[in-house]
Image (cartoon, rainbow, N blue to C red; front, side, top):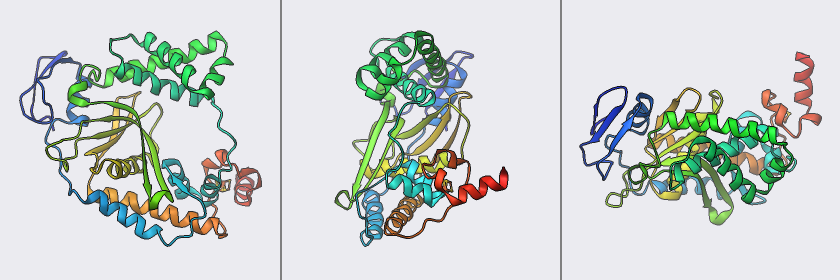
Length: 337
Ligand code: SF4
């Protein structure tokens, strides 16, 4: 995969780009081995695949044709969480479609997550280089200014608890910097975008697909619009879950519908290890993701129309708003406890 890049020297590797694609400018960087590996093997420096220009229209048509006849009572929003809920248990899926969850409040875990993602945005987007402590502090400042729920959570912490959160962010940013080539310096070549919110409205808004992708790399190819130049990455601080590949396939579909061309690859990257699970996007990937959307939309229509949900208890019952009154959960708890 490292076509077009010449590596010289170790452990600080000097990279020199010698091919015309995908980089427009001469890149002359000092990279560590893990950073070089991410550049060569995850981002990749070889030619990007090309897709038919009508692919996005065909995918949209396939979903709309299947969903058009459904009796969707309200506008249906589907994202990766609801699609996963549908695969787990229809009871939980229905509870999310009907908005039964209590209003969101930050937990230490969710606050740490949003803070780290904002910090990575600061790391990639700031004009001047900042050390991880300054990045963490700036991220907390921006979130308290702009995110009401985070601001409320943050205000209730004492200084020691805030410092603990900031140190967690410092750890995450340090691991991010150790994994990726310097994205701030490679903005021209890699066009990084953090926290990219993407929405696709189908059937005039009756069905909305949405998601927020942690990191998207790659600028569009203006001369060859069917060329897939983007890489979609979800950054993970914990271990791998079986749902992650499906999440990334959904993001690939979302990017295709929104930009008209798929990403060439979609990956979950684990910051602790610097390892990733990546999948090259092909047309079958997108058709599969479209089928999951269609299945979930069909289930939403029939369940909101009165069909009884098929209940499948599992570890996710712990986060289900129906758990207290769910017979399947009670039966499963009785069996195990
Ligand atoms: S408690 Fe468990 S089995 Fe019951 S609806 Fe929720 S997820 Fe499904």
